[in-house]
Length: 474
Image (tube, rainbow, N blue to C red):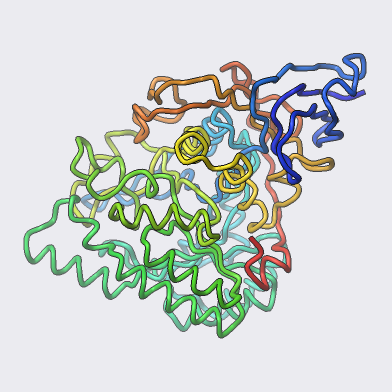
């Protein structure tokens, strides 16, 4: 007896797209069959999803929940927690998120992870994992501990090559420490997860623009510029090449970053690119719009030419996933900074991500359903050590499924969303919307009704596959 069968949908599987029935038992997918091959009497529940798209649940590999947020004037706030963000994610068809366990104090990494568990365990509706984030000086005992942390299911290590703003000193990891971390990552089967900007260029531009009195946030693209991305990407990539370290370059924003990744992949380096949906669809001209801060994250928005390069990267393998850099806060908090050195980063975007990218990829640009699913789900699962448990509609995979209705034509409205009181996607046209989201066989959202519990979310320990670590696998 199956628990649930989704009947007659257009199903995106690892082997192609076809009209199938998908049967679930417990938490996993038990069968994928021709329509009607399994009778209704063999299932506790059957749902007709004909005419709809059945895809693996979205995976957002870059979110920040209950995140420490520096505020102008020296204050500190926190973004919304996983209880809010994961609910919105499920409404939007995303079933797995990866956040960060950041070492913001001089404490052991195991304690960092334990503290992060206090924020997440029992407080998340969807499944989740952490990148381990190293900040500032990395002491020898932390390097020693990192070895066992990687092999114990926390294999992705986040590193900043810049402090981002002058007020955030202590965020950047120095190049010598990055070298030592890369050796450990390679030796233990991990993956470097990099925010790469050239700190000297960035801080020079802050000083220059402040000196010239050009401090409005409208000038952010001059500070976090394409040259900075070019220099830092190439320096990190060269160091990784020397140590055979696999890399995942986060939030690629510039054509220079895309090209650096492309060239490294052509040489056989295991390197993967992530961009954000706001970089693909907004550019630095959007800072001039009313409340233009809502489109910003770090690094800055760039030019239309950089946007074109990002889109090209999704076609040739330089860009492998589309994330959000989720920061869920109120509009008041998002707008509290209006200078180049205090504008709030991140966006509330986890809910509309899948639908927005369907509109832009499939409807507008003619991408195949397979490529769309790769960019919003499957590739992140493969790179981050979750596949085929996640990111696939296949027998034995977790029954994480989003059902999209492509007859829904509307514009995004903040009153229809479930995160906060604003959305940078307000008014954006969409041509499909999730009408059912299933997490490990449990229907979490159906017809706009939320059915989840905070205890549903599970932590996912991971291991990066060898093929991902040794050559460009995607």
